[in-house]
Length: 263
Picture (cartoon, rainbow, N blue to C red):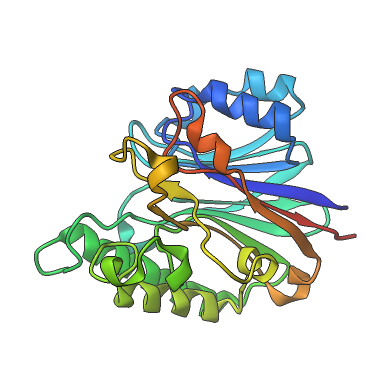
């Protein structure tokens, strides 16, 4: 059952429903994982998605903040949801495909502006969230699993526009990178995007603050596709749809794609 999966922080699924419809119509991934939907589940738009063949959905939502959903052409069933760090936030949803593959869709806390948990509660919440993800993966030992989402960390030097300048900026600090690495190691996950595109700058987010985001190109790779080793070898075709950042009234993130050739 070959399939293509995409992950995208949409920054309000109701506000940017036209962009989701555009992506589904033009790119046609089999599965689309959205983050920061900012909507209760019952108010998430579904009719237009279903009309394009995306008749299957699992979601975890809340009013105005956070929220994750998985849209699929393929049959899926909910495979759980976690509230790491006890934040009461809708930041995780999982779905199981008919071939047994489990897809985890995450929206990791951004962490605020100051990389110091003593003065910035949000940064502490982010580190605690990642620590509980690590512990969960140690306990659960995932198999046949794909983990995607806005993980809000750019781990590699070439995942940011300027490594030295961003070392003290939230999303690229050494402590965040270490925490994310511990999560990846706990689940023995392969970074599918970087397995396919091993070298060179690669970004999925550009700040709204930049007037000329494309020309300045001060990006970060905050959005990720990981897979467990038992299926990572079946992954290929990774790409970031950079042009989506330039669509009308865009999200500040671009969709990240990967394909899997699995039975």
